Amino acid sequence: MTVASSSPPSRLPLDGVTEARTKQRTRRAGARAGQGGDGRLAAVFIAPALLGFLVFLLWPTLRGIYLSFTRFNLLTPAEWVGLDNYVRMVHDPIFWDSLTVTVEYVLINIGVQTVSALAIAVLLQRLTQSAVLRGIVLTPYLMSNVVAGIVWLWILDTQLGIGNEIIAGLGLDRIPFLADETWAIPTIALINVWRHVGYTALLLFAGLQAIPNDMYEAAKVDGASEWRMFWRITMPLLRPVLAVVLIMTVIGSFQVFDTVAVATQGGPANATNVLQYYIYGSAFGRFQFGYASAMSVALLVVLSAITILQYRLTRAGQSDLG
Image 1 (tube, one colour):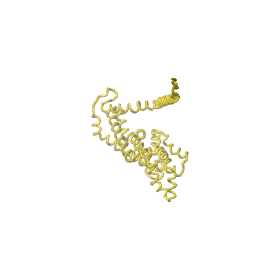
Image 2: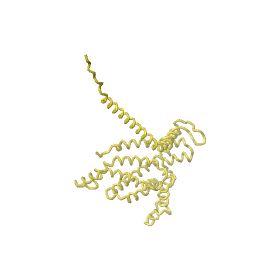
Image 3: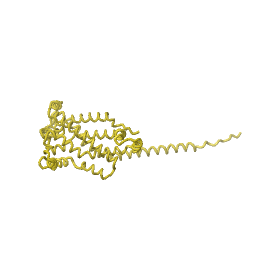
Image 4: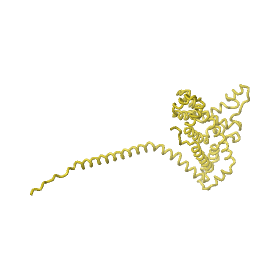
């Protein structure tokens, strides 16, 4: 009896599956290798900024927080005193006076700068988008705070300044802008408004560029005026950018120092003794680094609270653009 021999089943389908799986594993390994290479390249680019952050921001902040609990004058080792510096700060009338002067400066600076920058940005967007005009608007910002302070100190000098010469030429009494307790802080605030308003305006101008022109054209068809379009279209859609700009300018305003140091040195009669200048005087004038660190930490807490409050109230992380 003859038994029919059967041929072995073909292995081609299994070979195809195996080959497909091998190619898939190879692609995955290549993708992982590519991701690893991108990660290493990203780390190389981030490293300089990260090193600067650690050395010039994080470490000084942690060191300052530690020193705020010590008595330290550079000549002797830091002596731990617990909360003594903070208790002294709470009972220090000069600290509270400096904080009041700083808040006054911030209110004037932020109010005038924001309104002026918004007006300039809207005019640049609605009337002209000339790069030359944008460069002219930004020019004062290219000048350092120290140079701006010196220039305006000369211009506003009571006896020889060209500003007071013009006032006297108009038959008015000369104004001691930087030598009078009433005029000093508003003058310092307006000097810094003059320097920073162009930069703030360009930030707002960039935000305006993100608003579609179709909305303005549709509003014009409906007969809306420029004023109505500003309040119904521009302001709601510009809100996230305006909120971020306000947070940045408030933080910068609380840290005012250069203009005061150059123009008034905290005078007259502590009328411009802003908090940063008082901290500087305590640290490098009286070598009370522990107390100065405590005031710096207090300023950090105040700025953090204000930033969080501003962020929540202005809904800076949300946009009305659909």
